[in-house]
Structures are given as C-alpha cells and as structure tokens.
Image 1: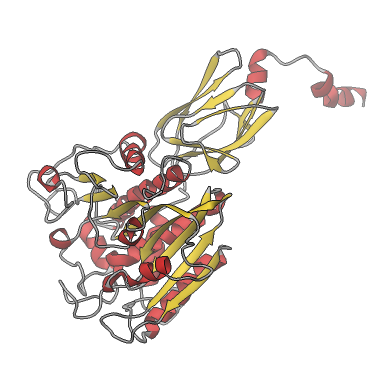
Image 2 (image 1 turned 180 degrees about the vertical axis):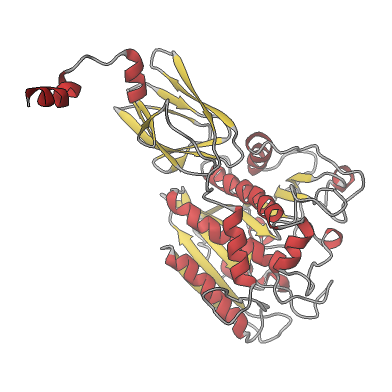
Length: 457
C-alpha cells in the first residue's frame, strides 16, 4: 500500500523538471507536448503557450488565432501567465516550423510534417452539397433538386430554393432574413429576393461582407439560351458562401459581416442593389463604414484544373476600385497578392502558349495568356460592383467564362458537365478547394487589416 501511494504522489513531490521538460510543458498543441503533436492541413489545432514574455511565431502557411481572431503577421507574445490560441495550417502546407522565443531572446523551433486533414473549408464538402442541390430524384432526403432558379414573378422553384438556403444559415445560428423587394412585375426586370445572414463583430462602427448570386440565367437569355441547373453560374458560388458560413462560426470578426445570396444578378444586379440601397433593419446600414466585399461567381473551372488540350483553365481574382491602372489604389490588393503568392505559393507567372477568350479590362495586353490573373482591375459584371460603387474595397473571384467555357449561360451548365470539363470529380474538388481557400484567407486577413477602409472615407 505504501509503495503504491508513494508512486502516485511522486509527480507532486518528485524531482524538479529539467529545462527541456519545462519548455515542453509550457507549449502544448491539442493538449499534447509540442514535441509529440501532429498537425493536419486545414484543421483547427488548439495550443497553449505559458510563460510571461515568451512569443510564438508561425510561417505564412499557418494561420495564428488568439481569442478566435486571426493575427495577420503570425506572431504573438504572452503578457500574463499564458495565451490560449488556435493554429490553422492551410491544406497546402507541407513542412512547417513553429518557433517559440523566450523572454531572453533565445528561440526553440518545432518542425512538423503536416498530415492530410479534413479542411474546415473543403472541396469534397462543396462537391457533395453541389450534387445534392443540383440532383433531382423522388427522395428529397437524398437530393434537393433546387434548380430552375431564375428570378421571375412568381417562380415557385426560386422561392423553394431560397427557403432552403435561408434554412442553412438559420440552422447554423445566424441572424438570417429573406429580403423581398417587389418593385416591378416585369420578367425582364424581376423583383428581388435575397438571403441575408448577419454575423456581428466587436466593432459596431463598420460593416463588410461576402456573397454570391443564387439566381441563374433566364431561359432564352444570351449567349447560350439560358439554363436550368446553373451549376457553374452560380450554384458553385452559392455553395461556397454556405461553406464559409460554417467555417466562420469559429472565428470572431471585427466588423458586422453579412453573408449574402443575391437574386437578380442576371437581371442587372437588382438583388444586391436592393440590399445596399433600401432602408430596413437587416439591409446595409447607412451609418457604418462599408470596408470591403468579396464576391464569388462561377468557381471551379479554373486553375489548377486543365482543359482537354492540357492548358490550364484561367483563374481570375480582381481587386478594386482601380482608378489608375499604373499604381496600386487599394490595400486589399496587397492581401490578394500575399494570399496567392506567399501563402498558397501559386505560380503567378504561369502562362499558356495561346490566349484566353476573355479577361481583365485594363491589363489585357499583358495578361491575355496569364493563367493566374490576380491584380487590380475595373472588371464588373457581378455584384461586387454594387459595393465598389459605394467605396468598398472589393475582390471578385471568377473562373473560366465566355469563350473558355462553352456551356456559359446554356442548358449545358450542369454539375455533370463541370465534372467532365475538368476531367473528373477529384480534379473539380481540387480546383474548387484552391479558390475556396484563397477567398477565405482574403476575408479573414482583410477583416484584421486596418488599412482596408472605404475609399470614400
């Protein structure tokens, strides 16, 4: 009995820990000594760092969060007994080094080979939700069949789909609204029916957002005769915003943030304009600074996916406003470049032998064959224009379109066709996940970058 008792107490009254033991005990990841911890790409990892004056530094491909707020420079210092935070290695991280710096300036590094994980924003989850929304079958628990989402007066299919999308955000706990504006009974200028979800920030003086249009091209519309499934344009972007809503549950944001699915984008941006210019308790507030907006439209048929001839599909990410094509006008462009070049390590100078069918407005002479067309530009044609006109800094994500995607605005714009265009399900999951993470990283970094302000302020 005495031997057993003394063994159980030895941890309390035994020898003092060595310096090495103290260092390990003072830094844990997922409640495991840092030396033995494992990191998985795209997954959250909880960490604790103890010891006043000690600091943690992470590389570009690991996001550092303190109190659920991202630290853009990846560096934090203990100012009390300890800090509790989270690490988020991006899915493309391979080998990472996390450094702990003691108060005396001496450092210790921990090397990790990042394992494959289940990303919080996942191409596979996007794929499954796309399949559910676009598939039609008798059992609505297996497929939703939320197609024929052209905006008209009335269109029961659109109403049904909007109700489903509304339920997604509301089910996650967001303050969610169906915003209806009936100002015309014309099929060519239909009314608006948006889904607006709000995530409140800790600074009530500002607002920002991310969104996509959920309507599809009207039957008979140009250039391909309209569509019914609208898988690429724009069920793809709609599902992206649904996934972001889930991921942002674990993140605190600075400003009040709207996650929106717009109607009537295909009829003159009427949905986003209704939100931005009407006075209601869940519309865009007129007494707060509108800082930035990120737009998701036509995603997945883009780098790193390839065409049947072996060329990469084009990848577009345009920031604005771009008042002067010869200088950088807005701070969000720095974030755009940093995410693609330094975090995702994309091949920014990659070009094809020929040229793409359409592209940017101000820099086409230089970018006609550039795979990753990432820069400031005045390009419009989607809902980011609504917010850019109000002074917001914007980013517009867009894949192949017009000549580079023959099914654009046509009945052939189906989920099955998207899969076929890029060469299979895995290729589509990979291409979508790349742009999903690009926009997600842009959002969380812009949220915590003071220089991203309304250009009219």
